[in-house]
Length: 304
Image 1 (cartoon, rainbow, N blue to C red):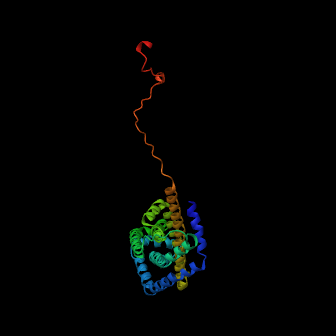
Image 2: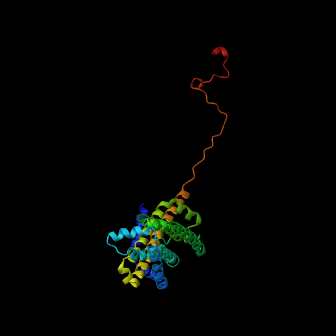
Image 3: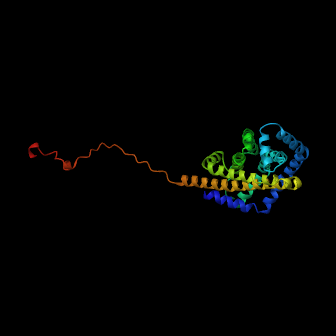
């Protein structure tokens, strides 16, 4: 637990470095272009389609009647943009994670290793292709989990629990692998992922909740519509910066854990092997105390 908090504060301090801030700009620019393109071509059709779906006869009529009694005349008008934003948020988070993993994580891990773990041997067990395959596999599982859980997002408590948990698992799998890819061997990586699985998953879930926080910037009612081109880049940059912090946190934690593991292995190897004592059967029979003075071979039986 001490390692968990120590790596957290170190990662937080590293986020203030100018190099880290600059590294977050490149994914931001790419994501802004993607978000603006999607918003320009698909925002109005998507909102219109969702609005029409909400106006269709069904159980929504009960909700609208209840809202009208509360003074809300057209609940579908504000719920439609909210549902669209909630639907596209996982896509933005996913792209942010992939871009950070490809562009930022190797540079951030190298920065941490250069300053704090310069003497740590680099065994380079995973290539760039292996990292991409690992990332694609974990991402596919996370996307599948998101698609299967989407109907549950309409339940208010679950929308605050399920997406952060899924993104937390994905963050833990991708970030931990990338943090150890350059320095750890395959056996060391498997050992660390198994030994610190709970801590790494907790870190991933925390980062998942941090990644869900910028969605509040998106769903700010009238301000969202009025300042669309300001809030979207701001939210995307916050996403990117959160994942940069995640990369730094996992880098500090994993490299420190790897250093401790190798120290343990070195100490274990330097310990002298226990001596094996072999007891030889010499055929000597131990006599009881009463026979400690055996009779002389030269004495006759009448002497006793």
